[in-house]
Image 1 (cartoon, rainbow, N blue to C red):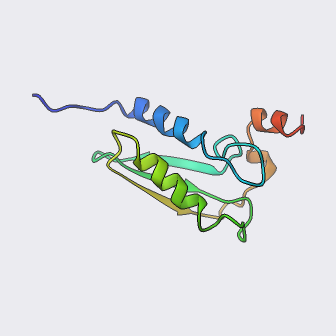
Image 2: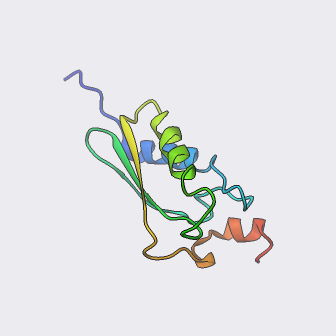
Image 3: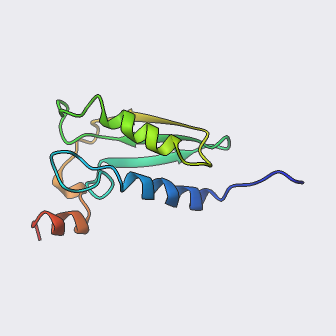
Length: 108
């Protein structure tokens, strides 16, 4: 068997690393620590689906942020394709932010 297998946990870490390079333009915190990423799915074909939200339904980057997420995740060597699904259920609240994000924003 010469088929190469990809460690999905390792790929997940790479995806998270890329997500941490994407910042909400209005808040100086990356979208992962901000709590905008609800889930990341990787199938056996290494297609990635990201379930995410925005801080508000009429967020000024509603058109550009999901595309940026797709493009950056798709740029990873082991990713075949990437798709972002936006949801507002549950709606984003500050409770979804990591301790690191709260500290960065002076909320702790």
